Length: 388
Image (tube, rainbow, N blue to C red):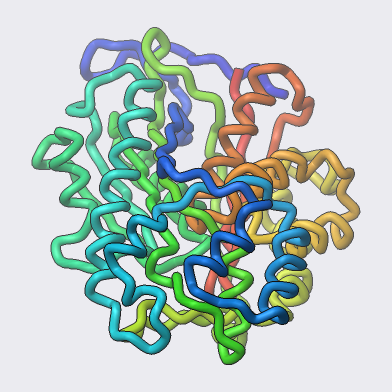
């Protein structure tokens, strides 16, 4: 791994900055709901909450809970919340308004917790944040959560805000790309990224007409994450661990229905095509080479990997298709195991594990790839470099 230092150059504020123009990841934080959902309790909890006693549904959910490889998730939904809003477990009930009320409050609470954790790790005051990038597929209102979070966190009123909404699982990587562009084009800026998600919009009783609902019950979780991005880190005050070298995005024509979600009076209805892993596999090699070619790397095992774990099938396909050594996707599988798929957040949980391994010297490769896949089908990718 490269031993990138903070090469001193005097900034306009008189403090020492790195002379490098590339954006760097300076701090991370996360926020999780209080309710922990062990995977071995999911079947009983979900079927009791939705008053379902269908043996076939139970058998399918038991099978899904095992195949997801998830062990623990965190959730906003609770028995107390369902007792307060029994309409949420009633098939066909118009529940969009109460769902949004719950979601809008939850993403603020979770997002603020994650942001405060990142700001605490960063060690500088919130007033030094110049830009806010907010990402969520779980809220819908005007003004949006970006404004309320800026107010709650005490950001300066002239903080420039950008919202990225309903990008699904590729949202976290998209937010990283956006923050990188902002940091590199606004010298001295510090970008706070906040991702906040909850599954309340999609929670509903099982139905044979909506088989994917059970996949959601077995796989998805709630939570928030935050990151602080900036170019030219201040040597005495900031501790970057990842340089964001090059980013790209690509969609696969004709695949817009593979990941399909629609807002209705009952919340959000998701449909996920069984061919999603196959579609990703069809393009992943060429997409990754676009990133690796920037630094002349040919072998996929010569980089480290931080992949959003949409599910075990996607990770398995990548491992086989690219002939990756098993340890290459270890941190992605670990994030999936400990949090489930938390949509836009999960890539940040993977990056947290990556940071731990970089600090411990467990990663020998200098360069790495950050990947996520979302509706479109949209590929988000970034070439990164570890920082000592």
